[in-house]
Image (tube, rainbow, N blue to C red; front, side, top):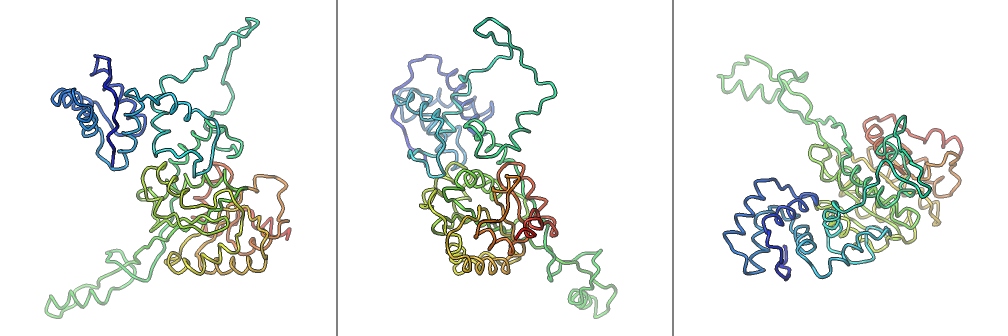
Length: 416
């Protein structure tokens, strides 16, 4: 629930214009605000008066907020826009280039960075196409025969991205889709063009017609949708990639009409953590902050074998039904017992319909399965693919829809 923020009243007498600019900042932050709501807000403030600070806050809140996930963003933008004494501090914290994990080092409210970005949008410096150097020579920048920035970003390694590129990559990942084909089941549904005879419905129809069978009812197999189970490594060597993958998983979990029955997500480093309920939160900042708070082993060590054992023991029967597809995101660098790891991988493979391993180490051309953990895991996966860029995540759709897709498994298995 949004909380009233005690602030001083604005001194600018052009209140209507300030409300318009405030609404624009909310729209940049993700709130669906149109001209109609802006007009209603101005009229509401005019009717309620402008003498009580609490009335002003809740009047605008009633006009601009209609979803629970928008309350926190509204409160943050309101605080930053209507002359918060700590405005400069919030702006500087947003512009810091340091990128942390899902669990931020500074405890910030959900939506705070998005609110700051919305207010800074009009004040970011623009780089002109023609610039004058110190010697006075004119430099012309042309984009002829060059790849677009978005196309370059698709193939760029997550670890090589700058702060601005990471922000743009997250927006691109939020638009990605991961469709899946339905699985035919033994249960059927009525269909005129069905190939199977439905004797039960035929007899029921005949009883309503005095026992006379006039036509044979038909049925077709009823499609069912599999579950998506994601096991994401958040150890120190995987932190940057896991952070981007979790943004992608949040988009998949909240996508309507994707086809997945349910999306279950687990993180593991030194212990296994179920973050499924956090991904159900529509606001991605709030979802990943809550997931990071629960996964206390972020950027720690790696115990893949023990974490897979915990998953097979405690969660496999709960989430692996209905032909689940498993995405395993890890680099496979494990120092524990290779025999135990191979045993748990074999059990995970037998429990899943398809097991796809995403490994960011495949970005290297000369990659070979030399690590003990990789050699133990590789024989028990259906597809072995890279997971270091937006393009590699886009190619997941073809890997899931094609049962014969092996990725790099065939080539690397020959090197074992």
